[in-house]
Structure formats: structure tokens, C-alpha cells
Image 1: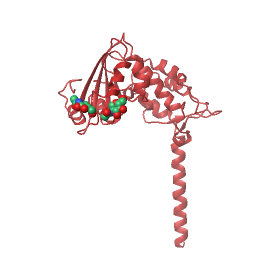
Image 2: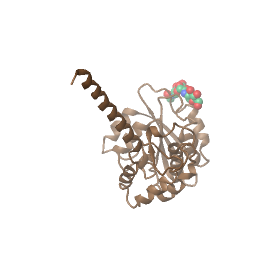
Image 3: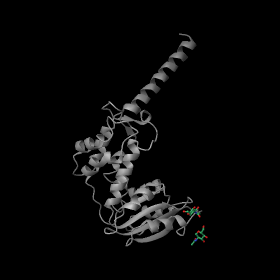
Image 4: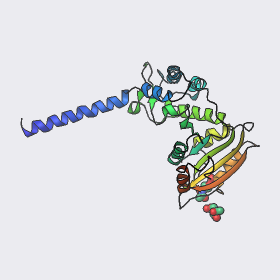
Length: 258
Ligand SMILES: *[C@@H]1O[C@H](CO)[C@@H](O)[C@H](O)[C@H]1NC(C)=O
Ligand SMILES: *[C@@H]1O[C@H](CO)[C@@H](O)[C@H](O)[C@H]1NC(C)=O
């Protein structure tokens, strides 16, 4: 075999591997991941949960999935929150999940609950006339009513509806507008806090050494205005280093990190 033959067969094999990986990424079934994650929660019929989830988008044009399509999933999840435990966040993905992961049982973000856990980090969609769940590249971009965004908008609303007692929100003090009107927190969650259930909203403004903003920022004044009368508002600036230090210290009680 000449050198060229060897190189060309290497190219063919590499090409086949790339194609196989792409096909696996697109058609790798979502269901086993969903079921395995669902089983980490007690008391759910995970097959039924999958059924209520899948019916929202399977066989539909992936650009026209309304948020209400996930109502049966919300009903099956039947989520109710322990008072004082819910943790909302915006632009603090890493620090907030690192915190709830290390300080287990203290606070729950949406992604730690049955509403968000199974689908966290995944992409999915359906296609008209098909019974298959497609993944990743096979799904069109981020059109307004795509299956993934509609899901997160719907579960965020359900999560906010469940909030009661003292509610916490980790916002980012290293960006100009910590309370961004386009965020899910501002456009969906805050609007749904029920003043007969929620006593207070405690904003933890997470900052690096060189904080861009602080609790006096005008966007946070807008946040206070959004809250229904009767819900108390507090804001505290806390450095990320302090949160990390505190979450690694098992001696410190829940909520005593700020
Ligand atoms: C908060 O930020 C504003 C504007 O950036 C600044 O003028 C003010 O001194 C800061 N307040 C505190 C308490 O750091
Ligand atoms: C504070 O909030 C306003 C409006 O909500 C924003 O435009 C402004 O840039 C923010 N940040 C700082 C650092 O002043």
C-alpha cells in the first residue's frame, strides 16, 4: 500500500467517525437520561413524567411550541416548595449552583428540583409528522417558541408560583444591570411572587473584587417596584470569595453566608 492510499483511508475513517458522532449526538435518545435523573427523586412515576414531557413537543413544528404545552408536565411534577428554601438567580449560574451543591439541603434552585433537574443542560425538539425526539444540531435555532425556551419559561413560572416564606435571589454585581428586564427572573419569576405566600425577597448581589455595581443600582429599584405590596425587600453585597469560603465550611448554617 502506498503512502497516499494509507492517508486517504485515514481520512475516510476519520470522516466516518465524525459522521457517527454527529448522528449519535442528534439521535442519542433523551429518554434514558431523563428517566435516570428522574429516579433520583422519590415518589415519581418516571415513565409517566416522560410521557407528559414528550407530548409537549413531539410531532410539532419545533418553532411553535407554546409554554402551555408543558402544563401536563407541571401537573405531573406536582412541585411544592419548603418555605424559605427557594433560590432564584440571574447571571450567576456557576456560583449559585456550586453553592447549592456544596450546601446540600439549604437552598434549591430550579435546576435542583424535579422541575428543572432532568432537562438541565440538554437540547431537544420534535418535527411535524415524526414521533422522534431530536437533539442538538437537528433542532432549529432559538426562535421564540422553541421547545427548550418554552420549557424553561413554563417551569420557571411554576417554580416562582411555589415560592413561599423568605425567598433568596443571587444576582450578578459584576455587570451593569443586575436586574435585567429581559431575564427570566425579571420577566417571569418576580412578577409571579404571591404576596400571600412570599414574605420577603433577599437579594444577594455577588461581586468580585472590582464590583461594577452595588445595591443602590437603579435596576434594583425597579426590582423593588415590581414586588407586590407586602413583600419585604433586602439587598446585600457579598463577594464571590466569601460565598465559596462559606459553602466549603460545614460549620456555617444555611443562610449565614450573607
Ligand atoms: C454604589 O455605586 C454608586 C455608583 O456606582 C456609587 O456612587 C456609590 O458610592 C456606591 N455605594 C456604595 C455604598 O458603595
Ligand atoms: C444601574 O442600573 C441602570 C438602569 O437600570 C443602568 O443603566 C446602569 O448602567 C446600572 N449600573 C451602573 C454601574 O450604574
